[in-house]
Length: 265
Image (cartoon, one colour):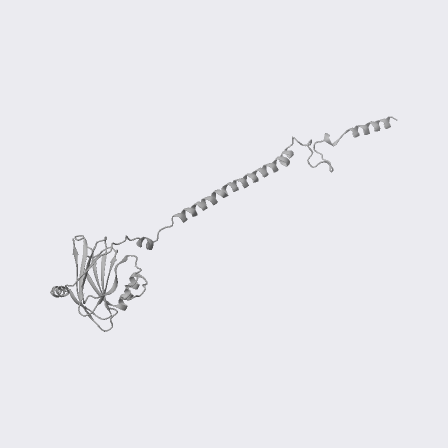
């Protein structure tokens, strides 16, 4: 009887015990995250708080990346906008920005014989422009004067005449004369001034693509065998005048030219 009573007491004591009395033991069917278990152990810190910290770090990194990305994008957009607003000027664009020139003053005179008689006595004032040739007189500006003047006439037949101004800085003050065949003159212009559109002295001179070269008087055939042609032009700045006497259109006739170019105050 005593053994039965002892057995009954032991069973009663065992039944009164629960798994909650043993913090190191879990039940297979217990809640995976019970609120009343292992709250003060290192394991609870590792299992519950560490994932939260990891999630917070990842969230902060994503936020920082998002904050930096718009700044870089805006900086790139601003740089492209600034580049678009202020493109660099090329050398060709700068060279093309030459000031406009005032038109020259021109006149004609019936004193043909008087001019020819005067110029026959002067050296190099009476020349022959051969058929198919172009004579170009290069006249640089000089600091002692304020304008350039010219007069010319021919014997028997007309001649083409025109004036250009070259803004290229002057390296020599000497007046020079260049004689060339029409084909040579065109080749030289193509090399020095770029492509040109061919024309003739009946319709005016060729269009020049050299940005430093400005046309003052187009090359036209002038009746210089009937009247004296003259004129003047105030210096626009540093540069060289090009006086063209064009006989390139003539296949058979040479032209006797009387001319003078001089400076005036």
